[in-house]
Length: 135
Image 1: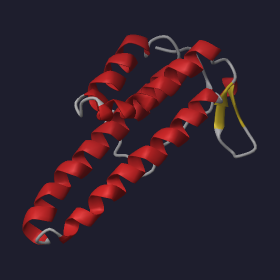
Image 2: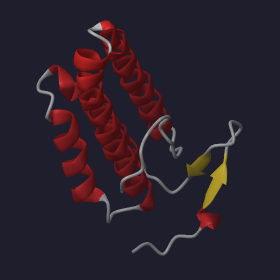
Image 3: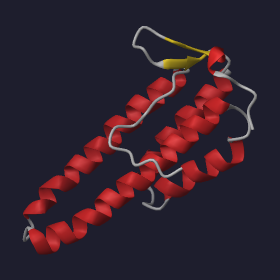
């Protein structure tokens, strides 16, 4: 798929892996894949469809876009699973007290999205916290 090796990447001062060959347009596209989480303001299903479509169309272009797209999709699926898991927890197990966890999932999504978008714009690879690796 890619002829790249780890020799093409280096680490920065924060010990993050950086792809110096990622073009500005690739960095911007990767940033928008992460910011697709803002699609939740329009329609909840957008948060999964948008990064998935963006990743599928550009994953063959570079290892940078493939990695960021895969990471964004995994995180969106993870957030969806966390929210679906909270429904029975809230309704059945905690008699509504578990509703206090819902803002935590939103905060996790918001902070993770911002940090990943910033890393992508700098050309860094990023791993979301609490993300389940499906892809």
